[in-house]
Image (cartoon, rainbow, N blue to C red):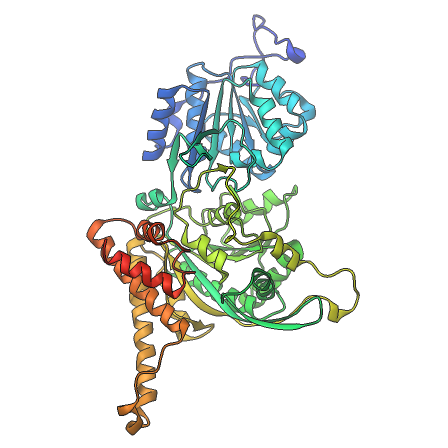
Length: 599
């Protein structure tokens, strides 16, 4: 597969497989590589020290996994350990992205390779293929791997567990490889499909857990300034819909209810014909304007939709809200890569996509996101949020707007949590059942009567809370009010500590304003006011007050110990149990407050 650009001399030997001419590939020059980050240098030293067949590197999106892998490829090509490189990527678009990145450092990879080709041209060091390609014809890739000493880079290795055929195909194709490098930037799978070439170790509970050789998490990257701080702006609101049976129901998004009702309220909020999405898109565009005016002049936004029809509707809404057309990427088709590349190089404000931009796609200027999809697995959520975290310079922040759904709030609160792939673990009952949401997304095809079908009737939006570093800030604020604008107008260039400090101040000011309004209202009937006891707080108000108290105590401990806020919240969850504070009950918040006071 490797080769120079000129014809070989008469003395060059032929390969038996396919009688293909082979020449020595031009060795990449290590001096052409960009300077490595600290985690990349540490992982490279560990890799070169071990010299083992398999190596798994887990690094948060935006940390530089591609650069790390290509540096290893250059080292192994340079010292003769390998003669060829095969990269396996999840999508066709990522094949081109890998080939372009490799070419910049002198490694030529064939992104147009097809299984029918059997071999690449002689002027390539190797090829980039997809997991689907390998699964369809593993014998072709096994033969290529056996022909030359090969390094195989398995990008986002969790995809090898997507199906039995993919996993078996990857294992069969690349067992003969001299070296295998596994990369992933997102939580490992939640199912029991073993991932080929990943090491598993049995823990004290008897369960097998994946073991990575190098781990660089979001919290590490945030501390080093490699990724942006992410603010999650969760929007709730009143929703009304008609069920398949013709019954009309109403619920407040984010309130405790059954998973069936959560799914239907969620679907109602995401309906392009309702008021919730236009209000959230208007807020997201306002946030994008703030970021652009604050120094990120080319900042872009991404709306992640559930399906193609909804994506087109969201694009029309964005044009109505902003007066500017949005770029639309609907599928992994031939023109999708070009549209993404055009958007990445432009200063266009908005991109709407279904799944195309959920993983690995590099658009560093994306800084505002709208999570308007029904997908809710930890893996997909992390992939999607990974599109916004890549930092280009110090101080850049990212903002992601999402429905106030308990499961999503939990995922947002656990951004810094590192997950291993666990085999044989019983399924947890407190997670959101994606099948319920998928069922809610389908119309009842058995009846043609309008009243027998699900129909979203109305939905309004209000800012419920802002989640940052595992903590929840703010009280409910109606869309379009000055209270909402206070959060949308947060400066765009801030460090993580500055974000936390500003959110704390904004929340305190908001609560103080509420107390003043309450006091002013009570002062009007003066005689009654002197004798009347304070009005009891509602459950929602008490939860906000407790969240504020917990955040203040966590912040105080952060300043005393230097521990990140997220790690302190995680330790409290470990000690007390229960979900993240954004979802916690009043009793759970009270227990954590009592616990943190004793630490």
